[in-house]
Image (tube, rainbow, N blue to C red; front, top):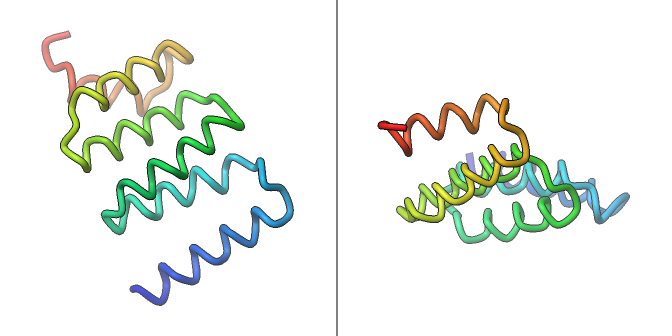
Length: 103
């Protein structure tokens, strides 16, 4: 699995050599790091994705990374931000149900 992780990481980084501002690569890298419990590195990647493309899905990913760090407050902030950008973002709505069960 580590070999697959390294291969995927290198593929995404190669993608960035063509366009350093291509947010889907940063988003995918953040997911990849999150799956390996490397939440801090994942946050660095998702922040770059947000810098280049302010999308609701990016904030959902950021919330998930904060959940991995047991930071519920930051997770809630990012779900709220996602829903501010797109009130119909299904992943944000689903995560909101988990984070705000009485809302």
